Image 1: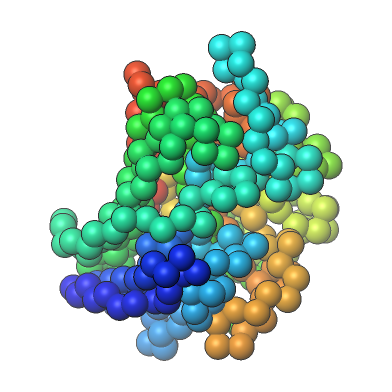
Image 2 (image 1 turned 45 degrees about the vertical axis):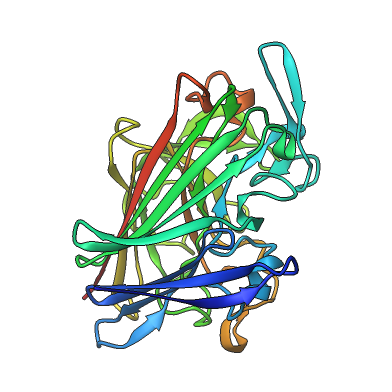
Length: 344
């Protein structure tokens, strides 16, 4: 196992951002303290060839202008909050609307645009980086001072461990996740429609035309959203409106680490299995990628990558029927995710 650190770039403020390279098992994961982004992930194929399977940028500058949130750590609230507002205890809070009439991924300057404090360490057969930041009361319209601690690690068993923690001194919506885009054939290797996906979800959150939940949790059976048995992502794509950007209800008990997804690439033999303690999993097939210039000249078009964002349901602050996503002095936030990799 090995951890190395180098300067990734200098921000307009003059502050330096660093890149941490974690090596364990047969894989290598790079992360930066700017936005706590996942920058690269090298994994072998069945033939022993190592490819970077994360969409991203070659330099810090790309991440400062990262409209698609490639590899970003999202906060205070991942996904959409309808009409950019919510109410708590009779007080209405208004958020920045950066997704049409809605607020998305923390607003105008979410956690993905901040410089985190970082510390690397070895533990439990793995190498890790712990990121910390303080979000002041009123930040992006949210109440309370929030302290976040997110750690990402790579183990000798070829697993990425993600641990999300937050404490806030006033009731506030919290929903942390990572927005990594994967292509198991290798970033820049075309689209992911030939990948086979299985989701451990018997229902999903139905949405309106602007992707805000209606409140209904709809059974997947006999719909294009049924991934309970593995199938090519392309199979029912047209019937799903040309792409997936939906939150699936993970089977099993929230708060326990349980399987939520498995995706495989028939060409390279790479397999990724995902586990979460969260109630939901946002499955996104890169529908809005529109020719983003990525690493080493790669151009990411529509469906160039997929995301599996472990999270609470979208618009939860406005949906009493959803699992509560309000945290505060008497309820800290702590969720985990695990990404396991194999090749055969």
